[in-house]
Amino acid sequence: MMDNLRSAANHVVLKVILGLIIVSFVLTGVGNYLIGGDNNYAAKVNGQEISRAQFENDVANERNRQQQQLGERFSELAGNDGYMSAMRQQVLQRAIDEVLLSQYAKELGLNISDDQVKQAIFSEPAFQSNGKFDNERYNAIISNMRITPDQYAQALRKQLTTQQLAGAIVGSDFLLPGETESLAALVTQQRVVREATVNVNALAQKQQVSDDEIKAYYEQNKTRFMAPEQYRVSYIKLDAASMNEEVSDAEIQSWYDQNRAQFTQPARYRYSVIQTKSDADAKAVLDVLNKGGDFATLAKEKSTDIISARNGGDMGWLEASTMPDELKNANLTEKGQLSGVIKSSVGFLVARLDDMQPEQVKPLAEVRNDIIGKVKQEKALDAYYALQQKVSDAASNDNESLASAEQAAGVKAVETGWFGRDNLPQELNFKPVADAIFGGSLVGVNNTPGSNSDIITVDGDRAFVLRVAEHKPEAEKPLEQVRNEVVVAVQRQKAEQQAKADADKLLAALKKGEGDSALAAANLSFGQPKTLSRTDQDPMTQTVFDLPLPEKGKSSYGVGNDMQGNVVLIALDAVRSGEMPAEQKKAMAQGLTQNNAQITFEALMDSLRKSAKIKLGNIATQQ
Image 1 (cartoon, helix red, strand yellow):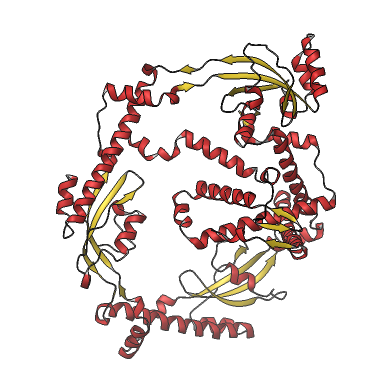
Image 2: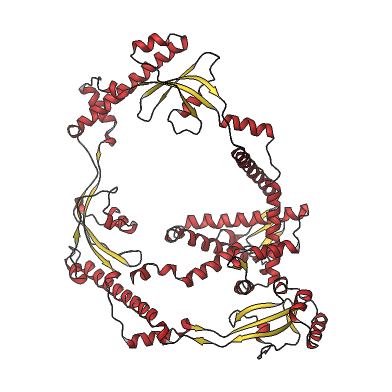
């Protein structure tokens, strides 16, 4: 039962609704053809208006997209006026950019053919079932969007034209073969080095530290020696999983009766249509049909509806909620019955009723187990919320302890050990709970226990009431307590300084050609040669590839630090050319080309914005 409670937000019906929202967002731009302008516009771009209705529709689409992507996090962001204002401005700028690109594409004479539009519709995943175009699904989605197929095709043509423009820009950038080879050689270059390490830890153990140095370091670095804020908490946990409710036959029957629609398949009808541009064409089609003409053949030859024509006029199964009014009013009641000529918003139609299915209701016996689960879930939630209220009232009425809340909940409060912000007990590790504990409102005067918390809900099916039992604020640790830590830190600091100074002297000697004797005097020597590439994770890689190329027969030298903080002398002995596989070289060239194309595209948009006459309306800045 609790799996159902905790995954209620993933119910299949909600997923379908969200899916339709996503589709409408993907198809944004349709509003340009459906919504006329008014005086309260969002913006005008070179005289072309972005209406208030279109803008608000785009904002709603963006809200839906972010809500699906961010989940509960979006609810927090949506409460921030600054965030929502920024989101509206981004949506407006995107709409302006779309208009600018559309205008520029028209100026260049870019065009999308009818076949390209058809192919885009057939390949749209939202209109497919099992990887194939589903005309019934297409009609249902278009109907839910409250647009006609022609309006959708017109909006899609605009979108494809804009994509064609962007593709032309991306395809115009390239790298010359010589440039690719040079870049590949640079990327795959290898360097042969030797290293000599000045061990800082060994030097640290030899450092002498005075009391004055210890005191000075402590005073300068007190924030490094802080005792973190600490809490001990008592809490009561409520969990809907503990609500075990029985279900009676009467409750099952009542739930079934009240929710019969969930188990009902509405009556369905299957039509075929032939769409024409004129009344005369429709009458001619009807005349051929009445003389025995084949409907599917005529639909493929004569229908101007590119989607249904492909399927011989078949519209798929339709319910009353998705059926166009023209078909509802055609009064077709028998299989195979033809309509007369029907005038519609997209032209003229001739329709045929191909099949029909009556309403079907699943019997109670078939869905009984499902209903039991649903009724148990509802009763558990009701009992859980009632218990929440009871415990909340008890905790607020007796604010000196959790005793009354314990009695109301029927469980004893749990007490934690000491913890801080970085080690919250796992049982309490939820953001709302952490915010309540660390927010300060539950701590009393002079760090004494304060009041009980309000009910804190977590994941919709769990809740907490808590109070801070003890609190220790953040405080500086006295020097006596951290003296050993300070001594080690001062020794390390002095050792690092000495190591750097010693390494600089050795580096100077190496560059003068006196390195062997200097290294021997310091009891150091270079290790065995190793080869490094630019992609190696070795901490010395960046330092090695920053060194100048060595002269023939000589080495170049430098100094770096390893992961342990030791100082490392580096001898660069040789530079070698690496090899890059052809496929990798091709991928590198494509990546650079795409990056350059993006820069070009941004430059184009910047130019279009600067040369355009853009006037913003008042509605664009409203919340």
